[in-house]
Image: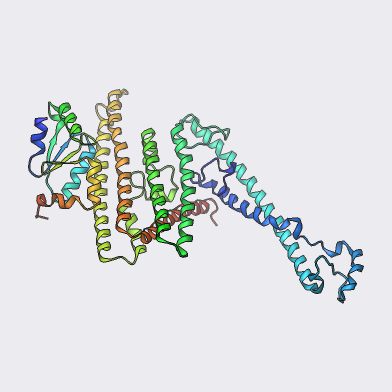
Length: 102
Length: 364
């Protein structure tokens, strides 16, 4: 889906969320702790919400939200993000986008 | 472990049942010591058969008329016979005392059990959710309790038994000489055993997520450390770290990084849980409180609660990944030692629960 392709290929870390989704919130907190400011797309406020959900599942995300993209490539949902982080592979992936502030 | 009918109630739930568990173990030792009553080992006391003594004089031993020749060797050692007789009498006496104490304990526990069942019945009638397999007739299962949860509790009982067996095996094997290959298969089995528990919990969470969240199947001390339905991975790493010595520099670095990632992941999930609490409270409190009707609020709240299952699964996923990463970082031998330490840590927590419950019952 064009919209999803466009939004996901934005620079940096892109996360598709729903305002009511608390796991999405948890993932956002994790990236914030890693000094990354992801671009958040809350799809439940988008008129094409259904379509976006389907597109995200098609692209290979285990659950539609949260869907995490880094540098235009799909990383996955909560499961994948957690696995990557514990294996030490998440930080190298997001290093270019980490803020040097704190 | 004793698996007779005395174990129809999972002992870890109601600590007052711990005596049954102890009785079970005592009963085992009672059975084992009863072996001394096998006919072959009894020497008939001589004071019951004075007339047979006249046959013994041919062996040339002088002294007491209370000599009894059952085996050739003993006729030359009257002291040994006397000692054996005395020991036998003493053992018999002790055995009788133990049996008496055992029967008394059984009686007491039986009365306690009846009393507890009455209490449970009463509570159930008053509408309290009594989450356990105990019913008033002590055989069937309560209607309140979903069969899936009952099945989980039973399965968990077996899981703990298998866990204890694996820990004993690891302990024995690590104290002796063991090849890396044998250790590797033990480590693999231990890991699979934990993963099996996570699968069980996932199924149970779908049936009753509050049950899993509250850790009701665990002992009280384990529940004290509960974090989203289980143990906190970073805490565990902290407990186990000293047991891995010696670690290479790279290993130490990897473990520290793992601990930090774990901590960050846990913080994220914890904050997500807090948000869930807030949104749930909002849903429940929405609209006018006091009108007496609240069906829309219930519908909304139910939707929110669905998320709880995901959180429980994510927490278990974190535990799974932590174990997996430790397995990757450590050598087979280190992993074996770590798993042994981990297993015994939980055993100690369970033992603490029992001891504490016993103390509460009989404060002296």
